Image (cartoon, rainbow, N blue to C red; front, side, top):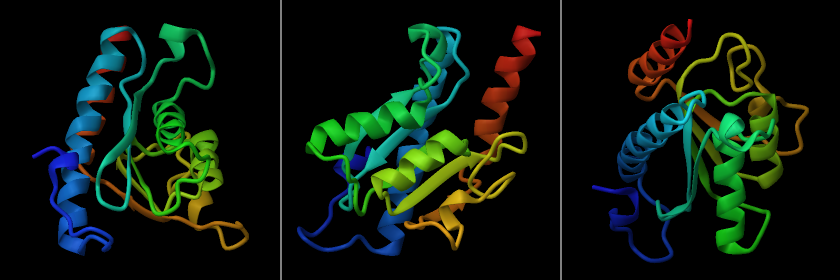
Length: 169
């Protein structure tokens, strides 16, 4: 079932169980986006932004090589698309789902957009900013803190990255 097909009562927060199901469905979609990034030579990372009713507001995949831009990270692409969808730079109550732990730039963008949750797959022990190297979303000094859940489909997400980099060596 796709995230946008997840039934929710109008105006109510999703239950924990329903949100978890939506996270799993969204991560599977993010993995497909990551595979598309790899197909055009970009690091395989995919991301989605879900609203409080688990509807997809924006999606993205890495486009740094494709578009020749240093900010072409999947999270930035997805956050920008979601902001355009709702015509606001504030994504209050939204969830960012991404196949790789966000870097400093992407964690900062999520904080600036005021997302409520970040759900990611593989941990990034070199540049991760949601618990591995840094933990920006939960830093007590931050103006806005974000609930962060790491490790969803971690093996599959990490395998996709490992396979990509092994093929390039």
